[in-house]
Image 1 (cartoon, one colour):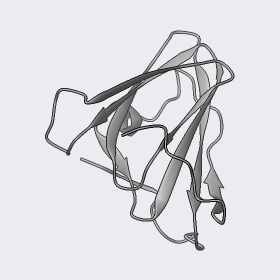
Image 2 (image 1 turned 180 degrees about the horizontal axis):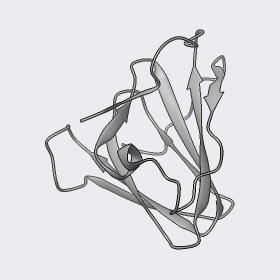
Image 3 (image 1 turned 30 degrees about the vertical axis):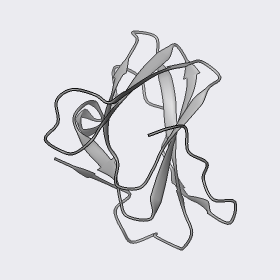
Length: 111
């Protein structure tokens, strides 16, 4: 996986509020993936978030490791398994991009 571009005709379907170490959903810290037809865009506002990408849901060794610092973002392609780790001062949010309206559909899946 590389830093993939979100297709230019896609739009943000949902955005999360800001997460910190105190309120980050447990699902984000374990293996999960974005849904079919959904790109995730993790945007770091403060601190640091480390993104680990995996070849499949059972893999324990990351094939990708990206350290995202304040002011940076990473994209996660549809159906790609990943997890994150946060620095103590991390603050981030996630935008979910799609080509079509997914207002009644899940944006990600957990293991």
